Image (tube, rainbow, N blue to C red; front, side, top):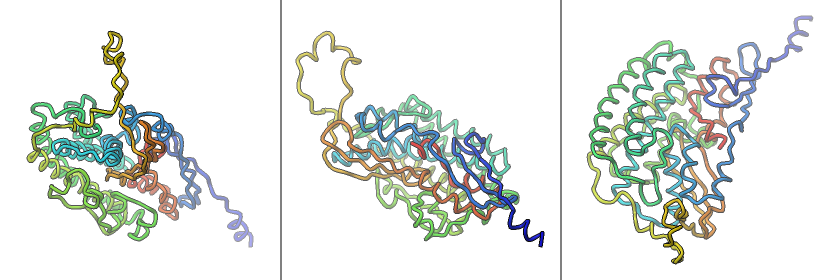
Length: 395
């Protein structure tokens, strides 16, 4: 009788994971209810990195807001810039020159590779493999060198513009990028040899955090999370944005829906990105890198502007781009999933509403359900396989 009584009175243990835990990938806090080693419940607490990004957008012109957006997902910065200019371009019906579109695709795919690399290293470190963590920085450094040569910045590029890009590719950049592609393919092969068939790795990820196809759709998941559950859905194929239709590449997907499938999808995406970059570099057309017609923004001619006071660039206001009175949802396939903005124009230079749809935030919703009835050690595996960045989760 006494044994039964003690079982009823058994108390669960409540543990805080984060927000300063080294493997939390930023300032995420999980309140985990444990029964021994088994997870009974898990509640994510967000908002430690909230900076009011949507509100800031409402009193900045698009040009002024561009440097802010790289701080959402600070590992895949080109995608946040792409979505910020794609929305106004669709509102204003602005054509992007062919060369600019090719340059954008090259930059986006390089950014995808950099993001997936910095997912792979910490994910492997979380489940006990330290070596890949040092390897990935070697390749990622080369991507950042290419970014620095083209944009002047390593992480926060501020490179995309409405109607094109800020600057053309420098002399010799294309050859340098082609060399990187050849080298990187050997790097990916090295990762696969090191990780994919490793019995300890497989033991940690196979069958952990399984999500079915229908479940993934119901939760609104996107990106590798969705494609690892057997659904071939990639916005580059679906929406035909930029010039992805002109290249020969395959959507990477797996049927299993576990952490291993998500790993395989991302590894496959890196090789596909290299294929896209190589084709874009070989077929890049000539011509302008920016649609200069949209530079002629409507502005009353002011005789005072030519005075001595106004001669200096610093005195001139940044060019404004008027957003027409309509609403629009624009989206791109970011490394973590569908990154979208819902934009309402108000016939002024500022957006009336700028709603960000971050992939990480929506993919994170399913975490409590995935970790229930798993072991405590599996939380890190599952959280790592979701691939979140707190900058875009909290905005």
